[in-house]
Length: 299
Image 1 (cartoon, rainbow, N blue to C red):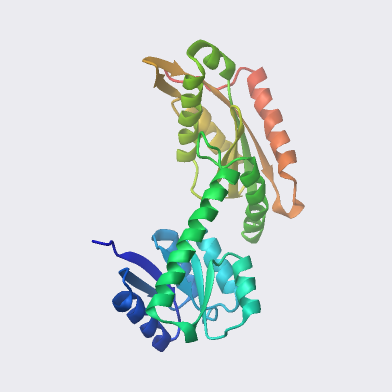
Image 2 (cartoon, one colour):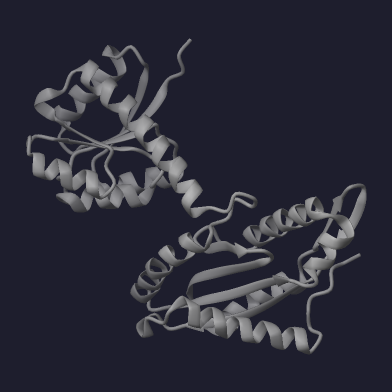
């Protein structure tokens, strides 16, 4: 039996919404379950907490209009395909919508069950290929964390969000002490397990909105958005250095390791380059190393 797939319908017009729901739920060969939102704000909330095979959206809503609607829906959940439904069969608008994140465009005058089913299938397929390419381009294959490219791309967005909130941005640089000795003593497979272990620990200690990236080797960077001061950033650093157990089992042996972490804070108004912030955090990290303040793992 074919599994029912959830679709989010963002449509303010009750008549258009009723027709679209009827076509999807009762006329398509593939069974769909439709959840409807009338406002963009409602849709973004649903996308942040629910799983949908696709989003079908009108561009003109009570709290948003035009391409801004498509842009906001795409940003609310970039992994979900977006299909624009509109009463205007305008090719220029269609091309513009595709350029900012939509996978397809369907005039309401062309709505029928086959067209809807086909456009959803194509959108899902295109989004899957797009997501696969994004994963290869922006994520570290070993740890699943973001890589350098993703970190730099999201840095400016983080500055903008923190500026709107009148807050600062924190940067942590994390380094495994004597990582080479782990590889030399226990082998590269154990070294890879250590990096995956550390990645999980770092992710667990920060918010979902924060960025954790692996730059290569044993170097990691964390970007903390919307922080009040360096003291708050240092609190996260101290938690990571002193309250987290860094020990794992590999090849039947227990491997304990230590980390050194440096921190820096950036005022979004200064639009400081990420590299400069990382250098400041890196300098502090080496001060910790020099003074023997690296966190010692619990045995």
